[in-house]
Image (cartoon, rainbow over all chains, first blue to last red; front, side, top):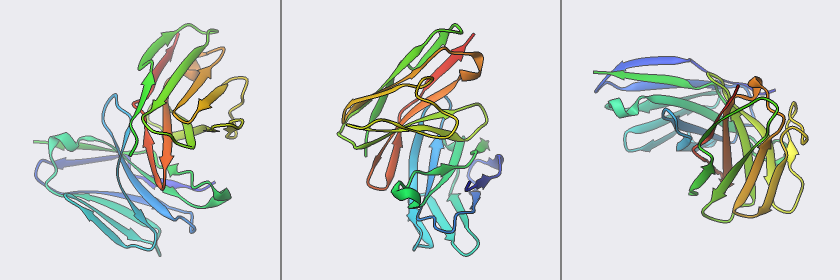
Length: 113
Length: 112
């Protein structure tokens, strides 16, 4: 099946920028998503990007897409302790007409003072 | 967007018993999904539940073990039947509106 890969951990200092990386294998990926999961909570949709875009910015969040390399990144500017969470990358493609996302295993972001 | 609630939020159950998880959405949606999230793992899709049709199960999941109801466009249930400790997991309800997919808070199930 198709794969979405992420590094498992990232540790940053408060105030620094965080960059979470993701690679995927499905060349027909159409939408790429970033979700945030805080302890004991469900997944919160942070942002998503359509495959014909290479960048999307939303306040402190910047998503970069390199479709040629099948690489997606999420940059969080001025990282705060409240950003500590697990971040999931996901991609969806029109396979079978369903666009059901495939998720990575999540990157645990730890923000320390 | 969509706001999703799930009941119960957590439960501890004995092996061999069954648990039904409820999912309520604040708007009418066609496509509803059930996922499982095991510790340190990615989300695994159990089934897609569309109103008015039988649920479609992913490989490795069967209706006898995970029966699903979808009586209307705002509600669904997932039953985890004849539970074993391997069923201990977080179960998440999800809906799609357009190209955005939203998740409920999850039901944390522990089977002893």
